[in-house]
Length: 121
Image (cartoon, rainbow, N blue to C red; front, top):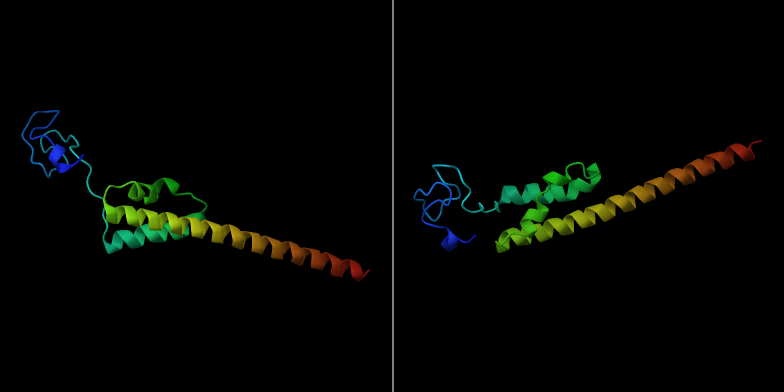
């Protein structure tokens, strides 16, 4: 809802409310969505979670705010969401690649150890 769409009275308790309020002070009814934080701390938190999330196997995917930011009507918040999505995709690709390289190296090491043991017979 846009501030101009906010009624002058609460739709639940019919008490007067101001257009900038997010909740009715009388009954607590949500009048409009609060804007998403877009400050430096919010950006750092969102971007850091986007980079680290794939590495912790998506345990906290329900707590990741990237989708909420990407769907926001605020251009700055939307830009933050897009950047967060880019970071999570790149981080996921890097994590999968590194897991593949590590697994391949471990397999080759084991094959080499087996071949060394067999050649000594």
